[in-house]
Image 1 (cartoon, protein in one colour):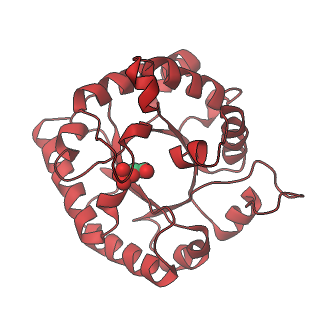
Image 2: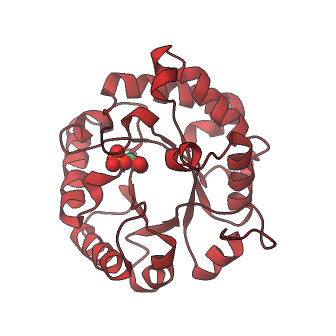
Length: 261
Ligand code: PGA
């Protein structure tokens, strides 16, 4: 069976104590699941990372940062450098989450600088992409995703594959009020993403895991995970209680096994 990826971005929720409790609970609830079968990662807020990295069994739960500057140091007030994240000893960085792009107006060119910097500093780099509702209205998803991938991954060497992950998160599906993508639509977009990754990196591009995110919940996780081009689920609200996330992971995994995914 193909490895499945499950992760959550905690956004600007949970203080240090709550984050540590959550991570420990999640690690212990899922400890019996082989990490050959699943990759589990959590992306908490910056202020929790140092404690989290020291308190959690990283062979069970990988830890990531929600953003990162493309410079190592300098006059970049309010930014966090890759060296600072290395000092904590993180596993991954997330680049270009929808809220970074749409609330904080980050551009594809900026995401590209961050992606290259993340990879050069040895982090698994999770590039998030997705079209807006307006773009979807004109069925521009494939074009938008292609643009975000081609610019976001510009100049990335094929040798970095293995450390590049992609999350497809349609903007209209994320967060409170978001409408979950249907499994058919998500599969179609994942197919486009995979096609583009193969164009960019040749056969090696097929190894890049592509996760779906946006209103994943216990009602749609099974149908999404069995789609041939969906390699994992990137979950927000439905993952923020460790017991609920554990149940969702098990439910998805059981379904995937039953379908011979
Ligand atoms: P959601 O968040 O599952 O709460 O929609 C997804 C995300 O922002 O990654």
